[in-house]
Length: 195
Image 1 (cartoon, rainbow, N blue to C red):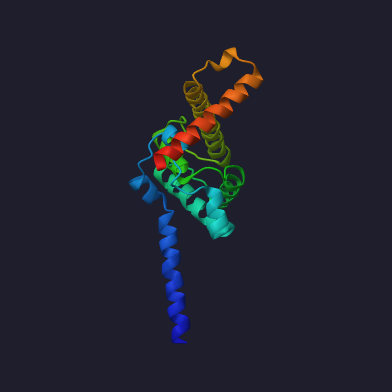
Image 2: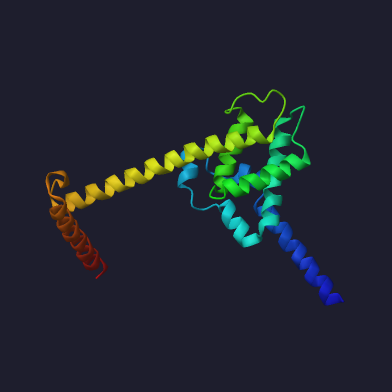
């Protein structure tokens, strides 16, 4: 019996630690991510999807419900979301926005609390919350796409610089050959630097 009780206490302590690691208070206090652009570059905080994979759906719903409850209380509205609405919103958010990271949640929730999404007229509802998530997610995707386009452009410029050519003035076959030569040259240079 003593061994079973000790195992239960250990499990309880681990669960408490896990819950605290995802708490909104922790992220609001400790995160260095302040803007949507910084959140888009963040690779440290876990995604909602990875939380589901690692800890299960029920645990993940509970964590997200805690975040929504934190939002509910922070806004001090006359008509707050009910427990049932919070559960439904949590489920919908996990289904539709599992690629968001906790850094994104922090930026989004801070923006909601600051009033960046407009006035609430003394109430918060599922449709309002989901519209905030959609607006944030659309902006987040645009920022990520621009970042990827920029990286692609920089990569092409680097290859052009190494090849010593203007890529736009060559045929497609010539561009591919020069690209392959440039990549080979880069790999040779990397190998030389390692030795």
